[in-house]
Length: 585
Image (tube, rainbow, N blue to C red; front, side, top):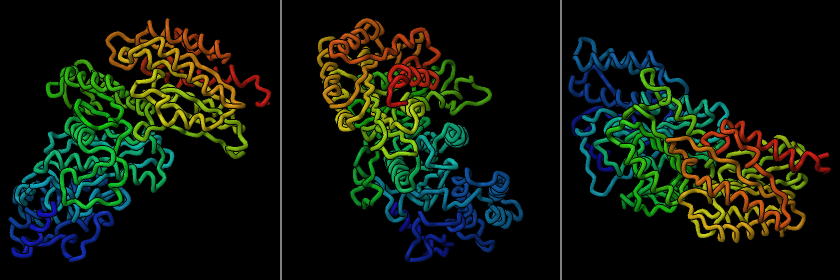
């Protein structure tokens, strides 16, 4: 990119072409600070030759097109028509285009809604990459001087967001199909409670490596700004990609993860403060595309939500299913949804498509909430109400897997009121048995929960130990569960309760996580053993298995309780443990 910019500036000076604002001064303004879209445009004049005017006008049109989400629809339509007339060399087309360009109406401040990913003079590119001005001008989108950016769509109160999602459209790597993918997804995920960011990444003639670097930088930018501006949902940094957008995400996961930076591809790139931010996602949503390399050295592959049509001829059910099996074997939380009867490119649904095509975001929303905090290894979330400090409140700590992490603790805190503080020490994907990749006692959150020295501990593990791929070992489970319970019982002054996991309901043909549970192991071995061990240690139990028996309607996916189920569980814990407690009085 550096070579391209240098070539462009030399060319325009030698040939006498108009120079855009950003290239006019030796001290170029930083991309992130431009306040008006016109600052980015090439200067146009009716005195230019038709060829020169057409080249520069097309560059301007491409840039404004990339901001279409921010523009007034009617003013953009006027510009679109002017661009068509210019291509047709209609009489007065130059003046028409200049007026249409100058009269674009932006919905709000561009400065407040756009985050440029790179400084113009420090955009990484794979070593040896060389792209000509002619190639850029011939591309369907963007053009000379393009700098990738995010369009941010924040909630009215960004601090109340439950997560932050980067939306990346497909387009075979040579286009961006925003109209049917990222743009309509903005409203959907905003309505579900997320801040959303549309990524306008580099496309052909740029390479896939350029796209991976743009994707990684977008993750870092969102995480950085979330911290700096106190956005909510900092424990849920996610990306959703369609087709080639999914390939961008998968390519980043395979090659640019954690603390790695663009020098992997560009030794001349100069890392900055943003590159110090962790680039791992909590969850990646790969919609009809993208594959994770089974040989990837990435130790922190994110949770994966996978969705594909049964008739997809580009990314087949078998290919995506194979990836799903691979990540399951590695102990990574994943959900695989096949939409029957549709092919590639269903986006977020359309009137001519089955209703199921527009319902997957709601399922993805549930999955996102179940796996908050996955990238940084901890989902501790403290719920306190006004009136007293945490030291003065009665402490309740809830320990468990994803059923706890995105489940009942917050609702329990609401029931208990201001005299209590409830901490969620659920860690998605964890199991009881040692030796597993995600054994709870091997995670930092285990010791952190003990260090809380809470008044009450509500403990629930075992569901993931009943997974078909978990390697069920009854003797190992007995040994580890006994150690687990004893470690909390040894805390002076703490009251400990062992919860028996809820039922699991399988749906025939479903590829949800519930389909991976061995019901015989869960119902006939795990649950009875928990009750038996707790009895031996004189620790009271809270039986969610009996409570949920016969109530599949309480579950979002057969395994994880939905809002109604979590409300029932919170109420049951309250009635069982706290309702008669003298301290509540």
